[in-house]
Length: 559
Ligand code: ADP
Ligand code: MG
Image 1 (cartoon, protein in one colour):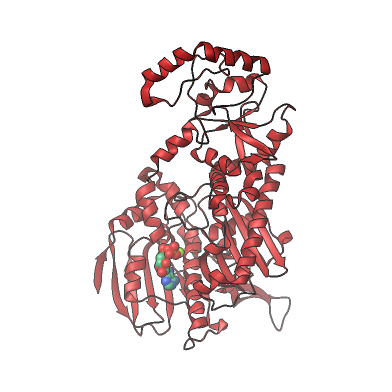
Image 2 (cartoon, helix red, strand yellow; image 1 turned 180 degrees about the vertical axis):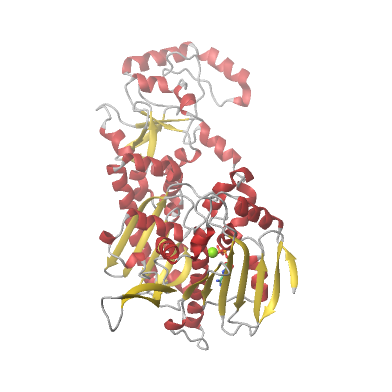
């Protein structure tokens, strides 16, 4: 028998897990069941590409067993199992996603939150167990192993004679405490309700022996307890169900079951297409920006199923970058099962699905903007920047698709407005869409350059995000109205008389201006008289296409 220590991070997490007062301890069962289901998926997938493995659906299931005398709960599966190395790697350290986030992002004091947020899988069993025993045999090994841990210091591994491939996880329940009754998890009704709640769409049967009262055979009046094997979960994937049958809670629990995010979904779409390509899809807009969204770790993509069987975890080709925040699944009967990643990229069906999804998401957002402004603004505050990047990137290839999803803060409305709204209330004599850039709304308010434009009664859009102006430059105009930075050299807002007067003054002060320019040297390109200032003596302005703010950004970029 070998005794090993947990890695340092795992230890910290375990400690938190054990001592947490996390209210939803029952989720440990969801985690164990989804691991079991993943393990069966892995065999299923292997069998598709490997002729030496057969997959007979009846042989694959998850089974719950309880032993009231020993106070144990067992979750068995007939999945792919683990080799000794896999046992150490997978159960000896925190699952990859968890550890990084844990180290970098989270403070210990928020322990309670972390568990709820990160759904740390296997480890969550230590919320209810004082010992966990795992018996497992891998499909790729003739030897079985026993892994055991009390969830504190380390674990032991030893060979174990296991006949069948698969995994058996035995939860030794903690002693009941004053406020906590761990015996609950030995009760049939409790287990049933947890399974229904979290794991109803698991595609393999979750079996359990259930006691039912049934009429006696020879005497129908009399009821007797009959023990029978039942499948607890309904197994029909949610996306195959009728929208009308599903509640918001159903969609939410699917989101959670899939670990799409640690938040709640802000909104979902359930799509069923039966045209050139057939597919079903459930897509979610998360409520919050994933913590790694703007890092290199973030991978966009949707889960891709072929006829109910998972073929890819994150199919990136299904989502354009500007909608990379979308999470969800796609299931199509038109995809071949043993399609490889390389082929997938060129697959015509995948392209058609992706196009369709892009359109549906766009329409969904558009109607959200129209019908549920508050929700849309919530969305926009989290992901608006991605939409702006979308307008800007790929040389503006997607700008027309995305322009109506843009919102900017408005000087006159003092809230976010859409470009269409801006255009609709423009005074007749206004020719351009005006914007001003700066670090904050406050700063922009104080810009001398905004005075003349505001004086005219024109609305100004405030750009505080670096990408704003780049996006708008790519767009160039909206509804034939050109965008104009209030700080740009020539605004052409003055009436004839002012212009004439300005010409005159220009002559008059020629020498003074030249002298000022000389004194400032190469700090400025030119010194000019301006007609647009009202209460400020002087302002900086940019000439040509690049504004001062853009210049700042460009200077920061590596060459
Ligand atoms: P995650 O499921 O997010 O990877 P978990 O902590 O739930 O994290 O599980 C860690 C790893 O342990 C899994 O990725 C898997 O490789 C392995 N594992 C857990 N349970 C099983 C099981 N029942 N059968 C096979 N492998 C398992
Ligand atoms: Mg898991």
